[in-house]
Length: 120
Length: 167
Image (spheres, rainbow over the protein chains, first blue to last red):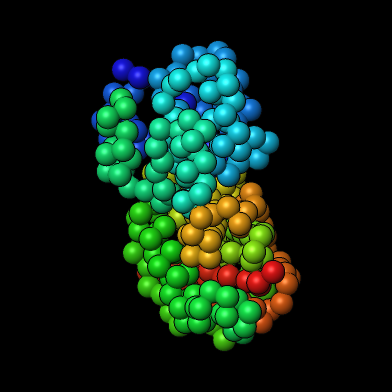
């Protein structure tokens, strides 16, 4: 069973992702939430996390900077971007910064399950 | 009320084409995340700026194009939208409702951004803004550089508008 961190400034989206993870029957134990990259880093400092799902467009610290900070801290946990920011260049930068893959919003539970199945 | 001529020239999209993108984006977001299959109507000929017992979610675009993508809906429908998104009954306009409308605007803005900028680096989306109230007026840029599409679901009606300029 894996612990998952969801980083998104929308509480609605965090709840949808959390519910989708549970409904998809993925091997998820604890789900932690953060409203931006700064909160995400704080959670990582306190909890054991096996997978991060992160938005890109967030206040205070966006998803791209968050990935860079996580990797700069020597943490190699898989990071999947879940974002409306589906532009080729942005996704390329996210992958080059250390993201494992990306999922575009809006998404169905099946799409989430398909993308995360191999990681959980 | 038409799409800005410089936008048409730069994107090679006519007003009808841009309206179709707004329709496709809205239908996709609602069918995927909200479990509602919408009916789209013909784009409005005049801008709607004043709203009653409504809630508006907006996201700004800045870069090679500037603009605002907004969804305006009655509060009663916003409750239904939020209830569907969260899978629980929501009976009053609270943080969940404003957050849901902001996130919908964000997803619609992301879709339009992809239409305008394939790479995605030359347009930035703002953090969503949400307004609600008994009566309010929104004034932004020119009323003429706008595409506004009405949608319906069962007895509910709402509008998605896109104001856009080429920089």
